[in-house]
Length: 388
Image (cartoon, rainbow, N blue to C red; front, side):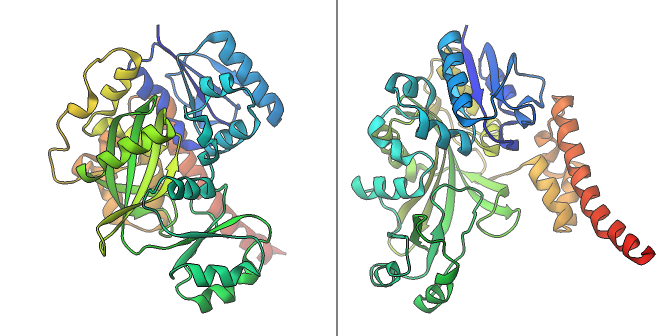
């Protein structure tokens, strides 16, 4: 029996479909370790829920005890708060290798750290944007001398595009200096103007099992925000890069990777490696190479090589995230996309979790609640002010 444990520290919606996907991928037992507020328990496909502790130290200790007691075949750390906390706290190499998505202990610094990834790329001659670290105002001259503008600041431990803006010129950077946090190790990185290619990949003990490449077509906000629609396509150019990345880091599990293609020299620059599943991971079951077959390779239900399968038959395949994209269509007043969801244009209903009423109810009720809360605050407060 192949047993899996999913770990979640925050209340992220990204993991909601993972128990279903893992069961379809051959997981015999899928347990979850999270709080009672987590989206991870808003589905019908997990087996046992272990309520996580509130305090950091207790959260880690209880997890280690749970893993050692139940001897899981695969532990999936599901969000950045959990990855950062566990990487910072776990001292035992044995416990680390049982829980974390990395087998090369010398590269623990890459986990949840944008600076760690930049240094890894520099040390291993991997194409990536130039960078400097900002801690105080005096670092400004070094940044302007050593980097090509435009540049973008990145908070070392952050997600969802937090704090990211583009400074096109040294003057724009100088004007922004008063807004940059001091002594917080802010990564200042060259901003390459090119096509971003997000990649959802699955590795097993450093070996690449499958990958799916896309281009972003819809954001929930600005170009650094969460994406809600993507076009997936075959991209054999990056396969060898992914193979080497997996081997050098010892990647083990679901990984979200991003490259920027620089048309000036034809290079693919690595800008992101998130060692956890995200909302797009579950969407991989609609594509080829099939995510589920790759998972079955790990669970022992499929012994063929997943990457040997045929690629995406169409030149591009549009995929949308139900919960995130439906919210976006409302706030953006995107009637064209809303019609796709309502009338099943382009087969959009396949992305709705009709297979699980519990999850469907959670997603739709969350959207309704969000809209109601905004309008209540907006219009009810006006009525109160008038009556006063």
